[in-house]
Image (cartoon, rainbow, N blue to C red; front, side):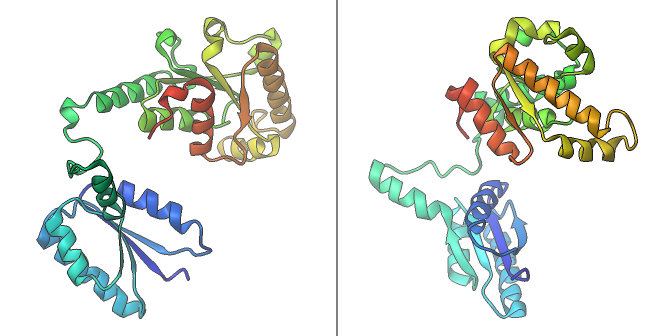
Length: 273
């Protein structure tokens, strides 16, 4: 069913529609073609998208699936009246029953932030991203006292993507610091981390997978050698156990799963999307 088309239509970025839709579609053994249509915020744009969807339905000989997050009533009316695809109005499914339950109207706001210039949450996310970039891969040990999380682990174990995800999605100031052979020879954490062990969370990885990743980066080097990968992983795990640092393997876990585990253990108050 790889030729089945799924549309994500929104008067905002479409991220909510696609994230929610992908979560639902993952329950089915299909690989549909994804088409995102963001910023559909006028009736004219809605008609253009409807035309595209209807032509797709005729071409494929079956209804396209359409996940929609549309706050604009006029745009939604066009979709409901003219779209020949299977329209799933995600906001209507949840917002209208909640309006009835709360006995109030929603603000019908487009997007996560009504005004980014005035949003403290948005400001905090930008600050967190800047912090994480400045403290990536041990570049700086300044201001670690204001870090929410400090990720530790050997090179290429997933620290950078996890720290950036924490910053972008949760507004978490996440630093990350690699554990290197010199640390293992000294048998202790890098000195700047010692006062902040309670903020540290470790990432480890299967040595064979690490060997594969490093070989793509530096083929034939000692850095990528399988025996060296096994040594570094073994020493890093021993160090984290000795220092009382919680850790998990990133080998078979998604960034989302890793981030959720970190927040659950270190900052449960920030476990919100």
